[in-house]
Image (cartoon, rainbow, N blue to C red; front, side):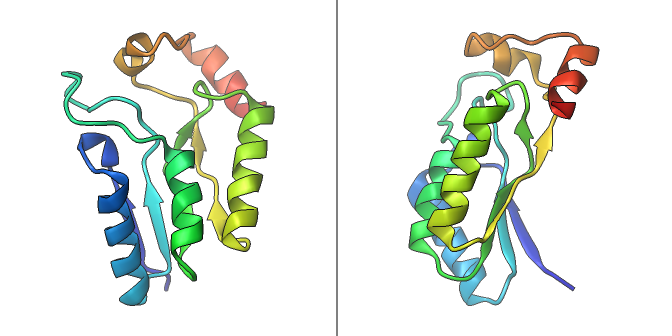
Length: 131
């Protein structure tokens, strides 16, 4: 059985907070560290800070040594498929092959609106996911 840690850093965690959790999880023998890929505090009030998932995972790739790293989940609406593939491949290389990509269709309309990201209807979001 693999034991994995999942965090929701858009609720206010900094990179240093996430690094502390990832290192503690790694030291405790957990197999993976996952984080959400959100840009907005879930209350929608603009509360303490988003951190970018793939930027954070790139840092963790260099600051950890064994634990697998990934997202639950990256919204297909946030990034075009090609640039996302380049980012994920880069983090995977930086980590020595420890990346797992979780991807979904996107759901939080308020988050898209707050950052000027198009929020298409359900069919188009799932078409993007398939792409």
